[in-house]
Image 1 (cartoon, rainbow, N blue to C red):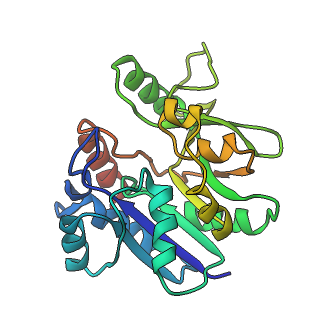
Image 2 (cartoon, helix red, strand yellow; image 1 turned 30 degrees about the horizontal axis):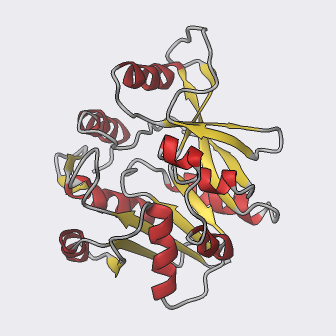
Length: 266
């Protein structure tokens, strides 16, 4: 199946303006922009036919083209990354069977997350989209809870049924658990990894649906699919010792740089 990865990136983030161009120091001391690190993560994925950055900002376009990325310019009216991906496939040539949305704030996304995601969607013909979930250990769960206690929007969590169909996604930590867990202990909480694999027809339909109340309350684009009754497949992925975090707030820079150092990512 032909696979396209789109990396949506916008400059005017409400929580962190200019985030795609923020520089992060890697394990060798080299500083690279967030959008470059996200592009390098995409380029490491096997079985992909094409990788593009989709943006509406000339500064991001210039920076991305400077390090060799293919850029698709999209409109400033896109309300989220899914809408930007939908617009990107309208202007690109090629007929892709799976479109992957690798959001530009997740430079720590391992290649196998996306490879497993594509396999998961391919093997579930009734699913409209697929997204990875990672079981949180005690250390990660505490980080999620500390962010919420401090009033920061950190990671997103997911709950799903026995058939792995998503029931809900939230910026709150769900499901509730009162238990205290050791750093490396498994918990019942699944950290949602902000990557999506879509079938092109449902991606095109997405833009025709108005945002529902849950999407507007949570600020989570994937809830538009859930509210419309479309099947969102949660694909369990394994960290294999790799720490994972998205860059949501300025406070996350130090945390991600420590993870880049620990993983040996240049």
